Amino acid sequence: MQPVQAIARNVGHPARKVRRVTEVIRGRRVGEALAILKFLPNTPARDVYKVVASAAANAENNYEADPDALWVMNAVVDEGVTLKRMRVRSHGRASRIMRRSSHITITVTDDPADIPAGARRAARRQA
Image (cartoon, rainbow, N blue to C red; front, side):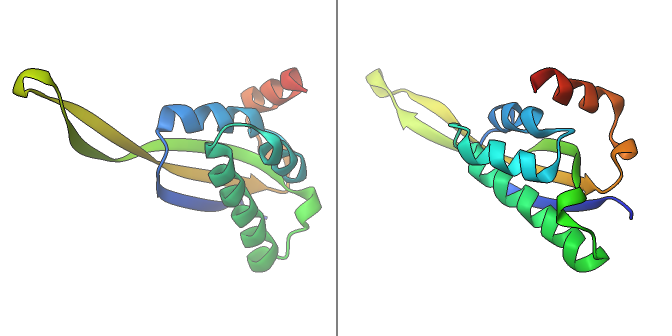
């Protein structure tokens, strides 16, 4: 089976904070990744959980892949749209507020040989 993707665009969390969550699940089995994401205290973990579940559902429905045999091959977080806002400050000044968003891309595969060596090593180290 070829690798299957799921993408969430303009998620309302900064890419820097979502990357901390995706580093934990890269190179792991999908079931294990979903269990980890369910109990992570970080708020972006909920959005990453939905994207991983969607990627697994895409593989199951479109390619008849076994959901228990899927691995998280890659997890990429890119910066999305930044909304620029102003906050009133003293003496008639204003400061800028940057509301950042991100794009989350999760790739799953059923062949563990497709996983990059660095991701496999990192998953083993965290276990």
